[in-house]
Image (cartoon, rainbow, N blue to C red; front, side, top):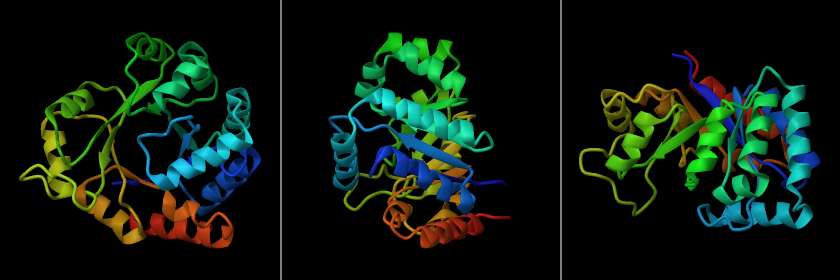
Length: 243
């Protein structure tokens, strides 16, 4: 089974141009896809580390037109690389669902991950533009989350490993069990795993559990000033999930 290596790109950090340079390193390392965020003003759902990146990006540029222009140049330069958006509701509404949908269509971005998008009109507008909306589930394995994954036309974002002290639903303490259950419940789209993946050995565990891909973020972002090490680490992640 081919397992996708998906690298997280906090677009705009430290600058838009430098983000585009980081994408070049990601691709040099052999990633299969890049998950692109646009910074919100209130990143309440993310860790303190990512919040700091968002705030630094916004301090440098708060104009979403400039973000979209940079992302357009990046995606058009690399048509062979898949790009996903991970966006807050506030960012989607600030850009406008219709405009965002057209942008995605024009630049071959087929999936958006949004943990808090709740505007039904915006959701339908994105769907009309051909955008697939990914849904997420964690080790709580709540029925409402599972149903959204079953009904979604985009991939499922499954939490890779529970965080310390997090509630884990009894009987679902292993990633393989969670993925197998989602498949039994007829989640038919790819299941990509993220959160808690800190090294290539973690990626190998995702593959062994039946995941179709995995997201890497902070482990490579922290190597932005060491691009050779960054490229090497992505290559190691890729090697860890090769058949």
